[in-house]
Image (cartoon, rainbow, N blue to C red; front, side, top):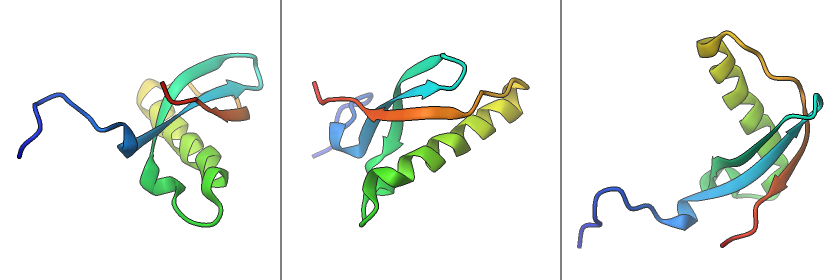
Length: 76
């Protein structure tokens, strides 16, 4: 049976809050759960988000400061 358009499964993504060294913060950054599979799990999140930030900086022309910490958001 097909899903309705616009609906997503919560299991497909894990959300993280990111705190940058300049004090800025982004909330609910999406990381595919497939990136977290394996032995190192959450250790792979920071490089994945840094890669997203680099891609965003290329498009916008504004770079982000380095990431200070990454925290997993609790499920709702």
